[in-house]
Amino acid sequence: MKRNIKNWLFGITAGMLSIAFAGCEKDSGDESVDNDATYKAILQEYVNATTIPTYRALAEAALNMRAANEALKSGQSAVTIRAAADAWVQARIYWEQSEAFLFGPVSEDAFDIDGHIDSWPLEKSAIDAVLANEASGLTSESCWRKDAEEIGFHVTEYLLFRDGQPRASLSNAELKYLTAATDALIWDCVLAYVAWAGEANVSQNIRTVFRENQDIVDFYEENTAYHNFGDKLKNATGNYSSVAEAFGEIASGCADIADEVGATKIESPFATHKVEEVESWYSWHSLADYEGNIVSIRNAYFGGRDTGAPKTNSLSAFVAGKNSDLDNRIKAKIEDAIAKIRAIGNYNAATGTYQYSFYEVVRDQIRGEQVEAAVEACTDLSTLFKQIDNLID
Image (cartoon, rainbow, N blue to C red; front, side):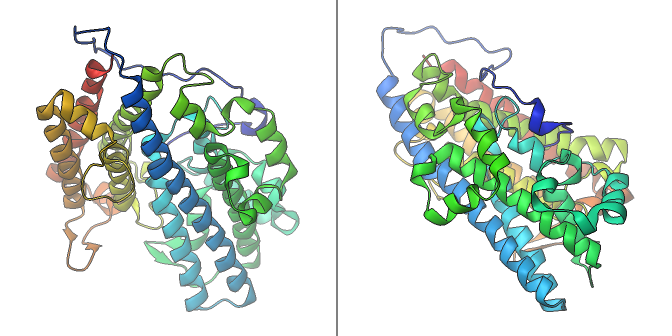
């Protein structure tokens, strides 16, 4: 998600979570019906089978980036640089598949992990200054304290890629920066997983990595409201005043990211002709990013991860029981949004490749009809998810 957050480490305070849906009113109905048991069952499946497994996969993929960097430091070659780039891509996939639930610990109200590791556009002058003046003395801990624009996914991407391909080589300063920025990224990914799952519920290896940096531990301990957040969401405790409020987070998160993909990630850079506003443009991974965001919506709506059909205890099953037409329209629009995003780059399903990157689309102002169709699909998807609020008593 696009953010430009300054003084992140010292400026975060805990706030109340919000699940506002603008312009929606509840349907009249039997308010005496207690849906809490249904909501809790769906929330349990959502937490246990969707959010926590996604953050676990993200944390483990981030650790694979560290292993790839160690091999890269031992000897640069086309093979080791490609392995480091591939590790970045895999971690990026899991991050994008988490963006339908950018509330709770990852939000600006809590640890602002989203703002810290996924800020763009890059501060190119600041990155160049680090490479010129700081790299020799840069540590992972000092890197984690940097402004969001100087670390995170897009800095590590910049160090690894050019024009959609892994770089031929890295300078000593670039390799030093890559290693430190990757460690900072790892700690943020692990923090997201620990905060959602609870430190006692992650592996010993993850706990060890989590406690490598005392600043991370101190920062975590200062904000106990977001410890073991998955249980808080399932049981509607902590900042939640009701089970219905907690349940509403699922649809709210889906609506938010659908709107962002359409309006901020696709429409804005194309309309302004600003290639620097294209997310993941050094790796040319943008369209895969956007598709991953819609996959995160599908996972949140269906329950689980990469399931072909909604689970019994899922938001989709709940909506189907209340308004089957709305459920069918949401499911169809999810697939439509993915197809329309792929169409921007003329995706070849047989090879799994795009003819055009979104960077090229914005730079050359081509594929405008496909861009417009994708934006419309994402907007429609967001609007449909906002209608779910009418069904929650």
